[in-house]
Image (cartoon, rainbow, N blue to C red; front, side):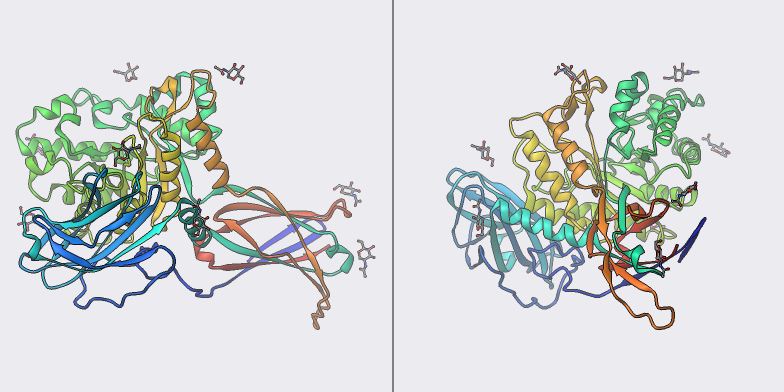
Length: 568
Ligand SMILES: *[C@@H]1O[C@H](CO)[C@@H](O)[C@H](O)[C@H]1NC(C)=O
Ligand SMILES: *[C@@H]1O[C@H](CO)[C@@H](O)[C@H](O)[C@H]1NC(C)=O
Ligand SMILES: *[C@@H]1O[C@H](CO)[C@@H](O)[C@H](O)[C@H]1NC(C)=O
Ligand SMILES: *[C@@H]1O[C@H](CO)[C@@H](O)[C@H](O)[C@H]1NC(C)=O
Ligand SMILES: *[C@@H]1O[C@H](CO)[C@@H](O)[C@H](O)[C@H]1NC(C)=O
Ligand SMILES: *[C@@H]1O[C@H](CO)[C@@H](O)[C@H](O)[C@H]1NC(C)=O
Ligand SMILES: *[C@@H]1O[C@H](CO)[C@@H](O)[C@H](O)[C@H]1NC(C)=O
Ligand SMILES: *[C@@H]1O[C@H](CO)[C@@H](O)[C@H](O)[C@H]1NC(C)=O
């Protein structure tokens, strides 16, 4: 409850929340069911048939190198979600992949899972095809024979682009918005009539941010371009060790400090990138030549203390050990548990912010491999299960450097499901795609897919104006005029932020027996999560105006009732 006392207006706000558990996100495999843990089940769950475009596929045969289901006719432009339960007969654990092959479609990958012996794992993924053709769908495992894989309940569902988008919009309504209703109690009927509630969003909860490099320090236009759009950033190289300590013992934070100050002055949030990197090539030259593990341990401790304490309290997260699935410099030098130990130390230096893993080829690459979602999840679990790390705040960063081709959206969704299953925030941290004829369209698809996934809490583009050297995803030319990609980003920034609105208070006669006050109600409005300022005015009463702040979040449930008591 907040009390305001602004001169003649006595003003009290109560905020009550009506929580009701509506029909949650449904549980079938094509849904956004991020709560579905990727655990292995002893019994196959019940199948649920879902409407239009749904097909249950029969297992046809064992091919030479995989299990094949009956042939399906795919339609050009269709978005196909696929799910199946898989189990191994002999081996303990092995990756099983979905692959598609047809006349003009050669070996397109659709997703993968680590299948186990003795229990069923849910494999989800899908395809987007650009030809209409009959195709074969295989379930393959590198190494084990087709007969060793047991596949059940293969289910395919076709969506067109409109249906896919509709489904996203439905989820956005649930996960990014809440309903709010204002209830205003007045002493006097004539005060109610014509009263208006004006709402203005100060900051949306979900932020679409953009990378920043040192070039921003050189140009006021560049700075203006950035801060007029973005509220979230991460520096490309300026916080990295090779930048801040090029020569051992001579730390130089000039660039990072200046960019940090710029961000703070402009109320731009910063995610730290990166305390360390597991790739030998990205160490300062002098580190690369260290041979004594104890010497490296000392240098590493010094680095962590230096950079993390310097920016403590000023960042919203840290990438701790960049790319520690693709590389293993610290593991090779300091032992198998090096990353886990380093996250442990990092959480002691700065326990308050999420400590991210940051990997590539995770959501952008359906073939699996080193950076696959399941490997990222396992790595984070390994870090958290290291002694003393139980309570660290984890974070999952998927870099999302896409290739210039149609992104596989159903695969991306299943990848985000897997990454989200740990319950840590998932971010896309370096989103880009090289130039190609459909670059803008593909980028929009990727960004909308992320925004409509419940696990995703932030997006940072690896992009910028031409003068900053972002030559893959360029948002503005040398005059800071938007490119087409820039127009797209501006469009999304606007769409993902609540427009200011004026909501009328509708008069309702109400006999409040004790105080005989008059109660007015606003209609229910659906608002994007974020911070707002709310102003109550009545045009017919010149001096009647009062303002307060309001936060609309997931925690406020499905309907938040804001009660105002006004005594003029
Ligand atoms: C269709 O997609 C394949 C990749 O699956 C690509 O190689 C091919 O160029 C695409 N064709 C068209 C016409 O876009
Ligand atoms: C997509 O599917 C819906 C539902 O079947 C249909 O009404 C609509 O016309 C389709 N849109 C396109 C562009 O095919
Ligand atoms: C109600 O408010 C109006 C406008 O401020 C005022 O003229 C009128 O006297 C008030 N009536 C009562 C019963 O307080
Ligand atoms: C520190 O870095 C800044 C920016 O790169 C540079 O201008 C400056 O000369 C450096 N200072 C020292 C002492 O090397
Ligand atoms: C590492 O640091 C410790 C403590 O400061 C010191 O005693 C030790 O000699 C250092 N080791 C190396 C190889 O420099
Ligand atoms: C660290 O890794 C080794 C394997 O190299 C393992 O035997 C040991 O138990 C691990 N230590 C901890 C504390 O987890
Ligand atoms: C960029 O925009 C300015 C106006 O803001 C305009 O005068 C200029 O011609 C534009 N430049 C290009 C290359 O379009
Ligand atoms: C409104 O407030 C101002 C100063 O706060 C005062 O001078 C003025 O008389 C007020 N007007 C009315 C209509 O009450």
